[in-house]
Image (cartoon, rainbow, N blue to C red; front, side, top):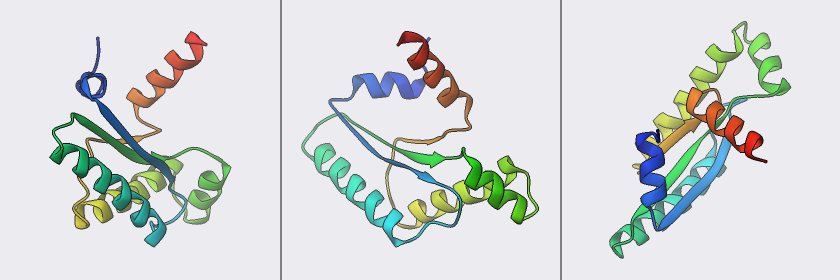
Length: 120
């Protein structure tokens, strides 16, 4: 069964993705700049009448994250929760209208990756 986001993705004529941003620190102007460009493209296509799916999110795996979490005295998921939320707050403040904010620690992402690799 397809999730709500999967159905919207497959119905879209235009799919726009930003990088999934690495959460080893707070977002900076470069992250915002990239997301604003993606948002502008999505808005342009929506105004043109296209069905658009704009996805962004955070990458929450790796030794750098584990190391930084330990330095801050936090569990890795707690560390990722905080910094991922910082990206969401920044994007909300900038009025970035994404359709899906994915986190690589989410079950949806894990299932998609498993399916991808099993298909290969």
